[in-house]
Length: 262
Ligand code: DGL
Image (cartoon, rainbow, N blue to C red; front, side, top):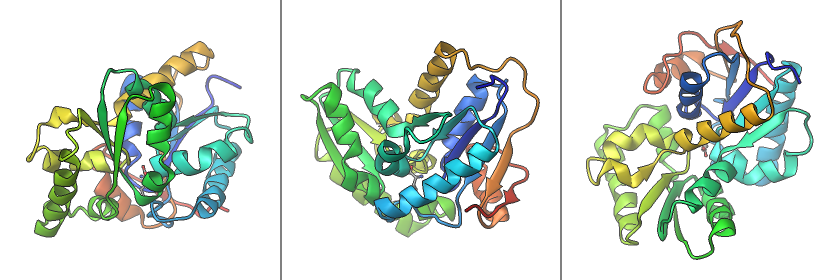
């Protein structure tokens, strides 16, 4: 695998840009390809079989681009497809849930909350992964099915959205949690709203943890690039203008190409 091959990053939409923006800051010399699967969004209510089919097509697309690694920025696909697909490709695959859960399990917390999509919550991936490393930690999981659409459609300041966000937060706070993982790539977009009701340092944005662990692994495997040869390229499966507009909070995407995969 050549060091100067690109790194692929994917998510169902703009959410993965929270991971992408961290990576670009920490590893500016890499060539990045970002795929936002806006046509199939939301992933959170899809079955495991549907997501395996979708993720396989995205991996095939990246394979055609000769990537050295693919970053599964999406929690839902990490939770539901990583185990099935992890050995089927010859590039490195980094899943967010498994990476982040391992780090959080070793931070000395007793009660951890997880906000995530219905798919991630039903899989109990965060709970299982965290308790694999420390079975004494209590993990409280709550699905927030409306939050992805709130972010994609920039509705975070709507009265109804704020009520919905507060309702899930109140339910979670009953568990006296030490930290709450924002276990969907879109949710860090809601940090400003969430922190109106409780201190911001209660929340964990997995993107920060994730980027550091990816860098460590690329270094260990001698896969870090020395010299960037291309600016990041953004692909979406539908509606590039909406993707560009919603992207602004995490990364200023200027252009995105619409592409059909599979
Ligand atoms: N952004 C994805 C995640 O991290 C899924 C959002 C969705 O499309 O439902 O779970």
